[in-house]
Length: 544
Image (cartoon, helix red, strand yellow):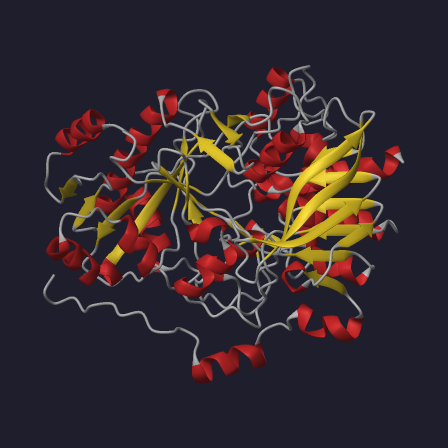
């Protein structure tokens, strides 16, 4: 440990490197926006209230909202996109945690469940989660689709039915297998799994000309990531759509069973506090695509969707497992999340966990490592460039709930329990074993009193102690980057929306994000959201 250098993060792309990136990366489509006549309005700059009329109003510009905007504007409809976050692009991505988290994430990447036990990572910027995610692109597993069809009455959701919609989005975003050798962080998962006879495979990514920098969570500085920010949203703007930024959707106004207007408020330049400016958007059709926390909050504030709104929240709980290696890993360097194992995805029917790796930077790691005093924490940080991390993505059967407080702000209630808790425990153990098989000197848990296992230790005793400790709230670090199922689609009467995404009990309102999933998808949800949003946007057009 004494021989390891202290990792001191510098501004990664300052000075000359920043100039090189600007000259060599793909062009920022928004740099040409003024001359192109794009209609982009930052509500923090308004000096008076605004009334806007359109054919379609879309709340949220992530995977669902961005996809729907391109399809509907391409059909000649006048589209307004409403985004609570800012318009941040490659021209101002600085690749620093202190800048990126407040700018690009909900609550500066510190959104949590009500009991503070789970940290929720959720994008809040133009492009939403697609701007800050790690580009992992999965089709919905066949077993999940079968479950949705049989248990929720979603006819027409079979793998063959959805294949054309997946195909179109994959072509649109350049989604393909990743042919480049994994970085050292991903390679620890590959080596360890193969040493234990556990299957691994490459993850497909939505990138073109990727530089393999590894800072995907800070926004792509080269525009290689084919997010909504550089694909569908510019396409919609080119076709005459309007983009409102720093604009918070407050309430859908409805009369005689039809939604007719959306009341919004402008936010200040920081994107945190409401201003005095009010924006009213009137349209024939409204699409809620603010994510599985934002969409139910909007529906609840509006009194729409019935008593099931906000229920059945799934989070794909993630209990990370770090390990220390003799050789440098530098898990923040190189393309993130390119290797995965689904060997444990079907432990209980379609439930289990997948093993992937994160791209984590020093700020997140420092906050995640258990605090056992300054000396011990400092020692962990000194060996940071020798740390690798495996993250289990647990498909949760048990659900939580999104509610709103008296001010209309979302409250997230969720506890890891039952089957999900058992799978989290097993995932921690299996991830530690894989680390050791890959050559780690030590793997450790993120319990408040961490458990460590080293080469030559009694692995069975370690597994028993992990099981004894369990997943107790605020006694072990748990994260979520996938929020789903709070405005569920289905053929049953208790579904919030029908299989086309139409919200029941009201006309002119659709959902087009992961809130519409009937249950947890079991994989990173981006591609599923986009395929379903494209499918349902085409059906909106067909319905007139």
